[in-house]
Image: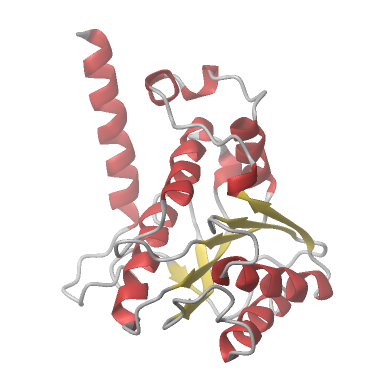
Length: 228
């Protein structure tokens, strides 16, 4: 019974923390207007050699989402960033367990998941990239998002700049926007986050279809601008 109560209180605390960032409004379906996440076209963290973590949850190397990640990483590297791209399909990403949810700081970090959480904490800039699946982020991205709870309360979770990347087979911009909502639902729970920009690449059902499109340049320019 005590464990159930503790779990409930933990969930309520997390929900309360996220809601504290939100702003009540009746604007549309997008969280862009209601999340309370600050948006800035220019950096709010004037720092040389920023640590940039690109989290690619594409199911295949060289997939459309992954190619966009590479272009962002290329631009960010040219801008002087210390860039690392993590391809989630290549690591042993573990689901958040009951023990992790109840006592996150007691969970060993000696695992792929724990080391990835440490990379997240060390980053100044985080790129969240997922194809749009069923109007949302995919399973690997959600597992990564949940895993960051292992660091809940660590002050290094705050003050990061975020970029979002998604590739969507459908031609509807609104479909891809729902995936961005999935990212924002996570970011709004972080302390003092800043959204810097995103790529919503639509009508890309064929593997590699993003090559030669303006979306590639858009991703590159976003990476190039991490210090601007």
